[in-house]
Length: 353
Image (cartoon, rainbow, N blue to C red):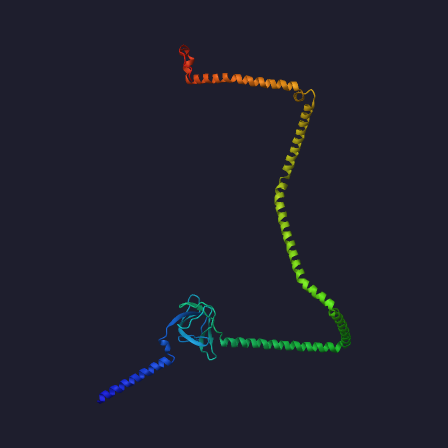
């Protein structure tokens, strides 16, 4: 083996060793993301301090991706972080991203687990929650502590004033305090007697049972009262509605009351005149020498009228052929008016229509 071949083999061995070392580093190290598939999600933040390319994205403390880019949102304001999420990790619809920062200032985007059965679609934009700034929290806490200490100081001064006032009252009103204490003791004694009487009343089993029955019946009575009030309210509303309808009906009558009274007066006058006429007619009918009375009461006059009607009927039957001949004659004249002249008198007719 020549020296050149030996150097070539040693070089190939070194190259293979470095290639294997690089593969193992990529495979078992933190660069396995190079051959893993990802999908993108966009998260909108009002402010995103500490977020930059490569910021980790976690879910329940487990890293599931990284920030791809951070751009300003010109329409809504704030910033939009584009996330590269590993395809094997699916995020549910109610899984919300929040910006978290450690005490040292390291930022990360943390997703909540979520329970919605539907998942975020690739390319979807989500609204994120910004983490509070520790410096702002410290400033707010300092202001709150300052206000609290000032309140404590003012309260302490008020308590001192109250103590001085109480001491002055106790020193100047010693006699009155004794009277007040005596009256308080008497009131306490009366209260004790009252409570003993109440215990005796409530301690009686019969009274306790009656009280229990009364309390049990109280909800039913309240329901009955509520239903009664509801029924009364409904009746009042219906009465109000009926009164409104009655007002709508009587309002036109009230407006035309004068004309209605005038017409009613005229109608009563006409009715009175008609009654007078009927009275006269009745008197005329009741007269014994009247025509109508004779017509209704004289049988001979009725028979004469019956005979006259029969004779008139016979006359009408006899006039019927004459009327028929006159109709034929007029029809002939209408068809042949020349028959009326001299030629018609000389020439005879066949007699056909």
